[in-house]
Image 1 (spheres, rainbow, N blue to C red):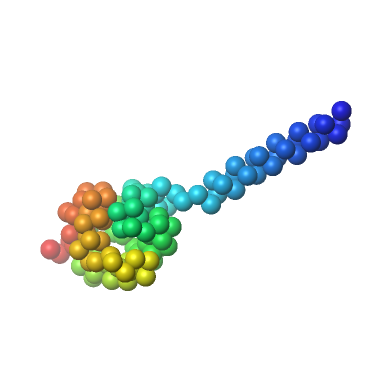
Image 2: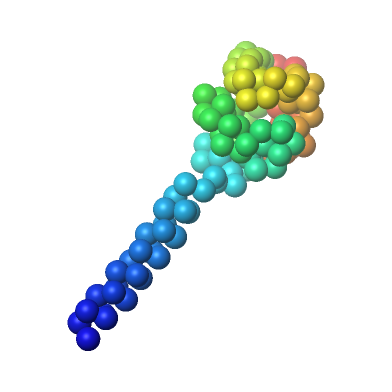
Length: 117
């Protein structure tokens, strides 16, 4: 009886560990730094894996919510992001990145316009 119970407990623990490890490595649907940006959709539209977009976006510093970025921040972020993304897919152009990001950015293109424009 004790042996059968040990097997059931072990099997239950194994299932729980597998479930947790699967969810721990799953790609988040949104970036922790920018929770309104759907990385799965952006990755699909740019023909890269969501993890690749997430890795490239880690060095980007979006303007705080409710504010507009400075022109310097827009250009700096874009240069870093585009350069990194092109390593994952050399076919990503500046125009394509703008198109995809505007589609998935909360507030669209207007939210990305620098505050001094």
